[in-house]
Image 1 (spheres, rainbow, N blue to C red):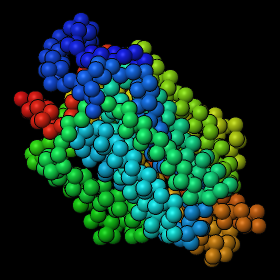
Image 2 (spheres, rainbow, N blue to C red):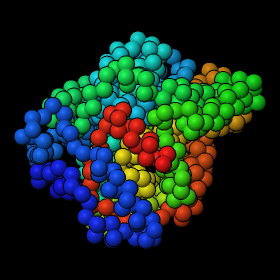
Image 3 (tube, rainbow, N blue to C red):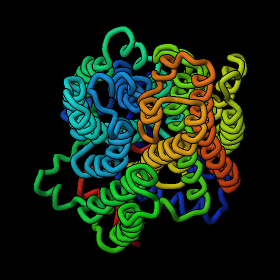
Image 4 (cartoon, rainbow, N blue to C red):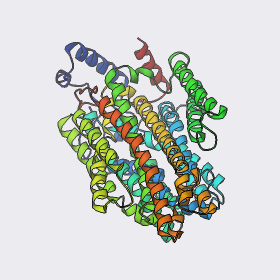
Amino acid sequence: MANDNPMDPVTPPLVADESAAKADVETPADSSKRNSSDRSDEQQLTVEPLHLDEADTNVRSRLRVLAIVGALYLVLFVAALDQTIIATSIPTVTADLRSAAGYTWIGGAYLLANAAAGPIWTKGSDIWGRKPALLGSVLIFAVASIIAAVSANIQTLISARALQGVAAGGLFQLVAVTISDLFSLRKRALYFGWMGGVWALAGSAGPLIGGAFSELVSWRWCFWVNLPVCGLSFALLLLFLNVHNPRTGLREGLVAVDWFGTVSILGVSVLLLLGLNFGGTTFPWNSAQVICLIVFGVLMIGFFLFSEKRLAKYPLMPLTVFKTLSSNATIIVAMGHSMVNIGIEYYLPLFFQSVRQASPLHSGLLLLPITITAAAADVVAGILIHRTGRYREIIWFGVTLMTLATGLYIDFWTDTPLARIIGIQIVGGTGTALLFQTPLLAIHNSVSQSEVASATASLAFIRSLATSVSVVVGGAVFQNSMTTRRSSLVAAGLSDSVLDALAGDQAAANVGIVATISDATQRRAVQDAFAWSVRNIFILYTCVAGITVVASIFIKQKHMSTEHTETKTGIENLAKRENDNSS
């Protein structure tokens, strides 16, 4: 049993105390099955640290724990930061690169690549070990940041953002997987709480930091800032991370990769998101291009599920995660939360800059109520779950507050008082923060320790895909709404050049044009058009949030164990796991 106190030496895993299993709130039959599974897992899974002498294998010192966790939080911070740091800088970026075409893919490429690559990184860590996967993802993220920082055109920037997203997909998932390897489920809640706090702080502070760089230095510093953090984290992980290393050979590992699943999951991500992005903007929704992309994307989902069930020896995303109603309800909550959260982070700054006429820096400051509240609430949630062992009530409270606040965002207009905006953000920040890590804990509590990495990958992929869909669909709603308002802008007497700048996919990149309109009536017409378009986005997200409220009712509470056995990676252990699942 791994020591639950992170500051005490960690002893080798022992056989779980049967009294802990008897405390489980499940039925006697379920408890018996779990005890049998636990004993089987403990016979298979032992700690085998990386490159340590025998004298060192019985201890993980306080310094080592702090160094490992600190490095994990640092790489998580920069990866989460890059989801939103560019949001307030997009008008500056498009002006500097002299192109607004495809601006939505500055953010969308990062999120799309993140969604597609995450499960691949996690399965790679199952085959080759956590440490090589983590170090590789940190290195690629740093290289991609350099390319983004020196981009001379928008095509290079979008390509660099896609490469960043590939690396971030690994960082997001491997941080959670590594923490899950180190700590018991109950103790994990505490570290996940801090992890969620880091995520909330980075995601919400991104627009503020990006706005400050764009206004005071250069938007390119949104990417240069990643390098020292990546360098420090790489060094700490290289020196201190001591989890099992299976020393799998490259050729042997490549044979074990689920290539059918890898190709099909990439197809799902690209086809669906391209179809959603093109719909109503580049091509009409009823065009052959959009219909084919979406239809083939949906068909690819079917092929992916078939390959995971029938073709893959070691599935990229084992379908056992979806076997219970409670798990599926948890996944729906996580999807809805991801869609709403990223939508708020992306489109509230747009509201502030277009409707409230805030600068990029000021719009970032206006998001501070969400930043501070979310970071604090996530940490508190982790502490509460660690102490009480209950997560269901926190999920219920979170979805309720998230839905309430998102519904209130619909009322934001040009003359909404600042105090009201801040108050609603505090409510919304609390609600979304409570849902960052609690769904993952609920999923972990429904699978064995040996399946935690796969479960993490599955949920993270679904979250990432939902996030990507949210940004694209939100952008489509905004662009189509601005197109609908064109008649009112024409009636206000705006010039053709201004109308073209505010048409469809150009509008978000040209929010600065509002301040250049001298006629008060015309300026108010443009502000109202932006406010109405953003309002439609929040109507969409309120509906999504409402679905999470209904889904949360079906989530079941189970006993959270304080016993723990660290996961052993490698092909041999993958084979044992698959044999156990099929028996």
